Image: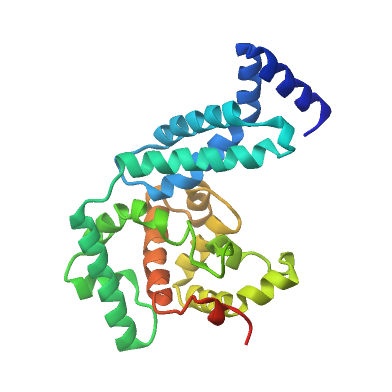
Length: 261
């Protein structure tokens, strides 16, 4: 925290003046915008990006209220956690997944499993729809409602390699040269499995995963790259996550498996 920011924070904490609070909020609104754009992929039609933005503002205000400048932490890091948590709580509160949708998700998982065993490759969306005896449009309608299920899935964490080691999908698509040697050794076997799973995805799904989790583009930006709508990008993302979930569900995530043999 630079000297000017520290002075602003100290004055606000002492006086609780509204105009100082507004200055701090304005300074960190970009975090709210960013996370609202990123997490909208985990919603269905019942929540908009504006809804997520409003929840994020509440998270930002709570972070400002609770932040202790004496602890020497970076507020941006602290606020990001609080804002993300507030948005996810709102998604889970409003955008709950009905049992019928969960059942349909299980049927898709079963169809992917059956087709993979039959062909030895990851099936296309059209093949999954045919296996389910539904139209491709109906298949996409189902995947449109699966976003909230993924909050506790791949974006939250793929696996734990110990008491505090959590591997996220963004960790396995980033440049390995950025990782510490110890971290690379710890996750080598699991990373290899996940990279293999991503490699089995159709090219367009592979690209969406890379652009979303590594390049950190939002749905609109990815749509511009691919020349498709935001909703289509969301469908591609959901389909990719379902297939990755299939590839990883039988992998042993125990510490012994994750460590280098």
